[in-house]
Amino acid sequence: MMDALSVVSQLRDLASEPQNREVIVQDQGCLPGLVLFLDHQNTDVLFATLQTLRYLAELSPNIPTMKNELGMMVSLEDVIVRHGLSVDITSLAQEVYGILNAPAKPTPRTPERERRKKPQFFINSSQKKAKSVTLHIKGLDSTDQRSLCEEALLKVRGVISFTFQMASKRCTVRIRSDLPTESLASAIAATKVMSAQQVVKNEAGEEVLVSLNSCGVEVQKNAAIPDYLPEEEESPEKEKDRAISRTTAKEDSSGSWLNAAAGFLTKTFYW
Image (cartoon, rainbow, N blue to C red; front, side, top):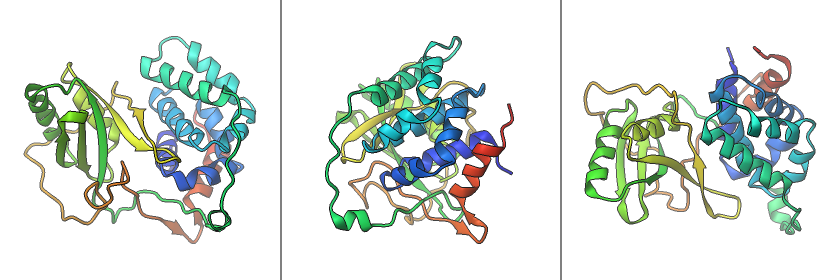
């Protein structure tokens, strides 16, 4: 049974993969559904929707379609001025609005071989045991802060291992595939001296920072130090040109997950 948060979270995960962004925007159900989600009263749904739109807008050819989608710009404006929202949500809404409203840039020509490449969708599979996430941690300035961060991450159920790059204030965390990245940000924010953003790569291969909602996210804690899983997933050591791991494809006889999600977005709303 699908619900709004699970659908938009999965769609956000799909949009985090550059090769999926064009197809998501071209789908007839996804953009209208995301516009409707911008009016959702659940702040977790709203934040995940803005993250999805931010990913999609990283592909320049998507911007005109997104900007011209009925209600998109008006809904973003409403989010920006809506009272009671967190700074993270308001800032992300302003960022997406600014990208969509910026002057159009010339679209680079795409080689014929790239045009023929068939896009693929990826979502988390139950067979996927772990994934790697790279975080940029504001306030990670000394060994004391590093120790605090280690203690915070060790308490999160689903964290398997982590390594720090102190010079760049980054931490690469290996986690179970079903653990939301926001849980890591929430645990780090609980130290009161640090905050985390996710490091991803955009279509041009440039690293960008993605805000993570650290407010009100439930963090399941470990009773003991987590067990290590076998090295089966992609990781920064195995795939150094990626900031996050690619998840596995999953389809069934009733159609792709995207079709099911699009149907939910356009037909079934709980508010």
